[in-house]
Length: 268
Image (cartoon, rainbow, N blue to C red):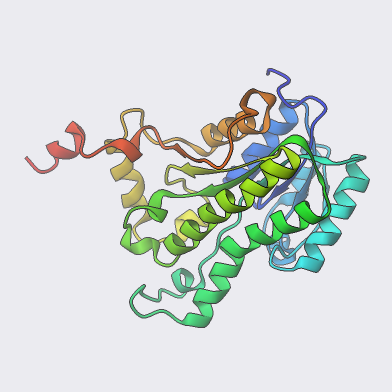
C-alpha cells in the first residue's frame, strides 16, 4: 500500500455487499489510511452486509435516504462529529431503476417509476452536493466522485431509463463541480466504469451479454470492481488535485473503440 489517503476522512455511499464497487473502495480506502463513515438507505442496510464491512474497516454506519435533504444534513453533521472535522472525499455509488426491476420497456415506462429512479440515481447526487456545499463540509482540495456508465452517451437498449439518469448525473457533476472548484477548491468527477456484475448491474436484462461484448471490444479487457476502487482512490488522493469536471472512462479502452478483431471474428 502507498498511504495515499493517510489522515483523510470521507463518506462512502452505496456499499451493499462484497460485489459492490463502493464496498471494494471502502476496503482500499482503509488500506490506504483513510477514516470514513459508511451510509446507505435503511432498507439496503437490512438487505446487505454493511455491518461486516464496518467492522473490518473500523467504520461507523449512518443510515440515510439520499433523496432526503433532512437525512443528508443529519448524515453530514454526524459524520463530521465522528471524524473530527471536515470531509476530504465522498463516493456516490447509488443507482436504481424501478422500470428495469419491473421489466417496463423504455418505450412504455411507468412515469412514476421513472421519477423515482431519477430521484434516487441522479437527483440524489445534486442533493448530496447541495448539503456538502451549504454546510461548507469539504476541506480544500477534497474530492467527490460519482459512478456512471457510458450508456449516458451511447445506446444500450436494455439499460433503459438508467441511461437518462446517468446523463443527468454527469451533468450535475460538471455544473455543481464548477461552484465547488471556484468556492472551495474541491474536485467533482464521475467515473464511467466498465459493465460490472454488481447487484444493480445484474438486474439489467442482457447484462452478461454487455460484459462479454465489452470484454472482446476492450484492448485491455473490462475493468473489475477492484480496478475501479483503485482508480477511485487515485481520485481521492492528492495526486489528482487539478482533475475536476471530468467524466473519466475506466473501461479498458472500450469507449474509444469502433470494432475489434475479436468482435469481427464472430461475424466472419
